[in-house]
Length: 235
Image 1 (cartoon, rainbow, N blue to C red):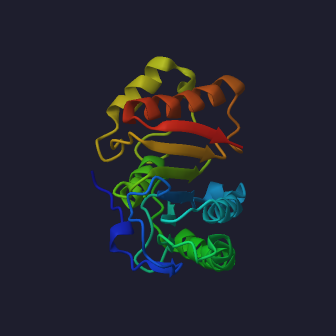
Image 2 (cartoon, helix red, strand yellow):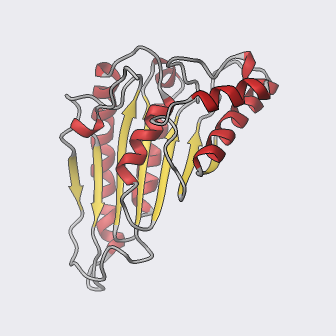
């Protein structure tokens, strides 16, 4: 497929929350979360950029060592070679370290880094259609090797427009949905078993009728069933 996922080439600017090592990365509390933000023109108008920053802060507050939180942005491609996404890394800490204070000190730094990153991504990523499924795949690449809980927070209206469109009247038709999900190539529907996906902002501002909004939800539910992910929606 003629598209480029640029996240792998990025120089990631990490906010490393220092703690004494111990316990190992196989602790049950380990987690990795990727906030995957739609920076298409419609997403900007719908306030999804602010939502992405809010979700980043919530993910940092929810961390328990060891944990990582990422913020990446997508439109046609994911990220840009000139933009450094946000990474927060909380290693395993011993009992002498106050994790809550540590997280509290890094949350404002992560939020301060988010806005310039999202603005850089908005103005520099390729804009030949919004590739929601490419965004999911790139977010999964960041967290798939991590131990413990894996979460993707997808901040988007769900209006995929790369190669085909999801926010159309046909989305209410079960056969149409099944054909489109089946037609996604393997890069767009990786094995997401064990991954919890939350979609925030689905159908916001899409002007879809009620049956079509339900069809759009069903589209992503069928995608999650196909890939093995657990899916929830958030307003």
